[in-house]
Image (cartoon, rainbow over all chains, first blue to last red; front, side, top):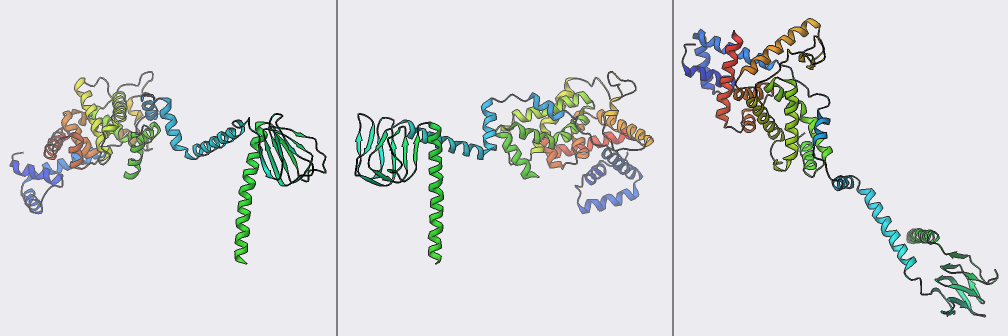
Length: 217
Length: 186
C-alpha cells in the first residue's frame, strides 16, 4: 500500500482499458519489481471477476401485466384509432359499402314523384294517373325502364321491361317479347342495381376481351 | 434490433399501449436486475422497476428517438433506485423467510440454471456474499459499479445514464473497485 499514488492510478487506468501503450509498459515494469502493486492489481482483478460472476435475474412473471394494469386508461376513441390503423382494409371496404348504399338509397328515395322512362319509341306519359302508356300500333324496340309509374301496354315492346315503384298493367304475353320485372321494394331495388352493376362490369370486361381478341386477329 | 425498438417506441408515442407491453418485455429483465442490485430487496425492486416503466410511459414524449432507449430507461430506473435508497434503509433481506412459508428465503426466487444441489448451495452463498458486498458500497459508487460490471456498459453510456462527466464515472468506479477489493480481501 505504500507505493506511489501514480502507480495506483495507472492500475485503474489499466483495468478501465484506458491506458496508453507507454503507460502499460511502465506499469508492467513497475509491477515486476513492486510486490505491493502486484498484489493490489491481482486483488482488483479478482474483485472484478467475482462481481462479474453474479447471475442475472429475471423480472417476476407478472411484471408486464402489473405495469400494464397501472397505465393510465385510454379513452375509447384512442383504442378505436389504433384498431382502425391496424385494420385499414376493413375500413376501406366498409367505407365503400356505405357509399354504395347511400348512392343507391339516394336514387331510390329522391325521385319518388317524377315518372321517368328510358327506352326508344313513342309513348304517352299520363302524369295524373301516374301511368306510362304505349299506344296501339306503337312499337318500342329495345329495353324499357319505367320509374315511379305504372305501365300500360297496348302496343308492342321487343325487349325487357323493368318497372320500379310501379305496376305492370294489362299485358298479354304477345305484346312483350322480353322479360317483365317489377321492383317495388328497397331490397329488390338493391339487388337489381347490384346485378346490373356487375353485368355492366362483366360486360365491360367481356368487351375488352373481345376487343383484344379482335386486335389479335 | 435498434430499428425494431424505434418502431415500437414510435407506436408508443402515438399512444399504443400494446406496443408498450412489447417494449417492456424487451427491457424488464435488465431494469429489474439493475434495480435489484441497487436495492437488494425483491419487493422493493419490483416496486421500483415497475415505477420506472410507468414513468417511462408517461414521459415517453420527452424521450428523444435518436438516442439510445436503454440509456434513457436505465437513467429513470437508477434515479428511482437511488431515491429509494436515500429515503430509507433496506428493511428486509434475502435471508428473510418468505411470508407464509418455512425454510424458504428469497434466495429461492432467484432464477439459476439447474445445478447439483451442492453446487447450488455454494453458488447461492457466493451470490449472497457478492450482493452483500455490493450493498455495502455507497449508492453513488454502487450504481457505477453495477452498470459497469453487471450490465457491461461503456463508460460513456454510464456517464449518460448517471448524467455525470466520464471522468467522474471513472473516479466512482475506481473508488468502488477499491472499496470492494478491501472488503473482499477480508
